Length: 51
Image (cartoon, rainbow, N blue to C red; front, side, top):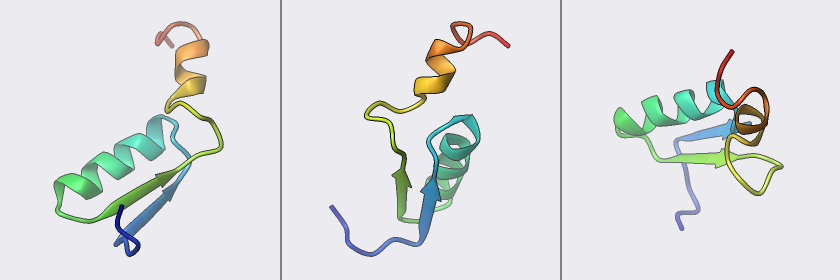
């Protein structure tokens, strides 16, 4: 795992994951940090992905 990143995203919710994905697509080295052990935990438990 790299020790130097171009972008650090704090929070792996919908916005954090989108931000990390776009930064990675643009060639940045990204680290995504969240307190949950699984990504998008709140998205999965709040309505099954429906708003």
